[in-house]
Length: 53
Image (cartoon, rainbow, N blue to C red; front, side, top):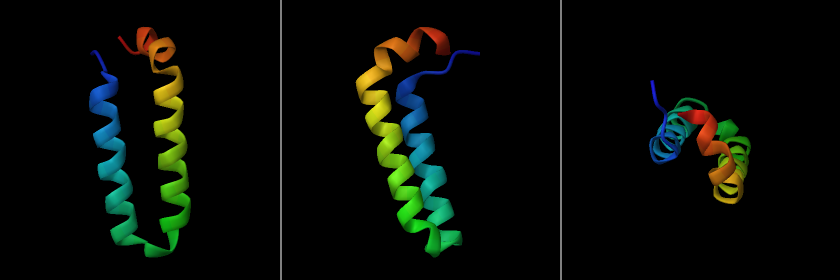
């Protein structure tokens, strides 16, 4: 099974949104983790991508 970075980002956003709806107190933590994830993928996505195929 091949995982593409273009598929991972919306999936992470969807999971984060559902968690925020279920547990609003986690909003700060979820947003911080999401931003860190997007930043790491943006900076190192080309280095991570070969391992995801």
